Length: 420
Image 1: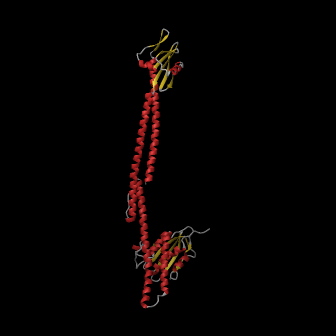
Image 2: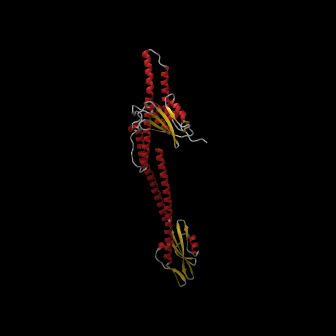
Image 3: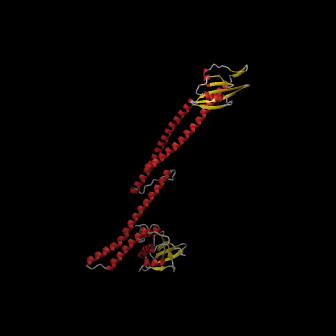
């Protein structure tokens, strides 16, 4: 957060500096042009004032005295190459004499002065009026304006940096508080949400994103609790049988029957394997298996009828198909009166497997909840169904119970694509 805040403030200061520099340069250039124009206007005005007093009398060029000594210091009149009025300073006399013989209007700069020459039309005479304008006040004004602009620009840059720091600090404080709340809720109150409604700004979008993150955390915790429940329930039954066999053998003094122990150990191993597959199950491209072989493996030595097409392949791994069908067959055998059977049919790009029994079936009011851990009905559905749901969700397979007066679970698997 600190690095981001520094970056934003630095970028703001950089942009403000660039903008201020451009404005200072532009304003200085414009001011220079204005002062130059003012100096030239003043020079022309003075030259016109002096020229108005020049006239010819008796064949000579004369100047009507205006009584202004100040004007004599900055204006000079040359007639036929000879100075007839004014006192030219030694520092500019050479340049003034060049302008006097030029015979045309022009300007020149000497030291801190602007010289302006203007011809006066008089018949038979060559008359030039030359005036001087001191540029020092204009240059001083430009320097003061530049200094003031730089000071104001520096203050503007500091203000922009301060405002950016304050705004970013407040914005990041909100983000920090929201992140802290989300982290705390994720640990202690996973059900809490910001619920800011439809996002109207970036903070609303952040709140919505954190809500989704909290929802995923909540779902992950719920999945973890369900997995723990499923493991506990799936392992408790065979462990109970093993303990009972051992206690019975202890009381009777007879050895434990190996077949019973091995059967329950196999059941434990199958339960653990199934649960691990449920946690790791993934469907990769190119995965396929023969559904008939998988069904036969799931059935084993149990009395289950199979009605499958001659050849049917699905796009799931063989062990996943076995892990899906085996708990469903166990559930059917527990609740069937006399018969359990399994069928398969093509349905577009899917293969639908129906696991059926002639038992009481599912309660229509509970049909949507039979795959939840701890939900029982109709004498108990068995705790293998939550494991089936977990495996199906991981493998991209759809499993649903159907309430049609008998035990009926429908498994929809993706059909394997034909190889070329």
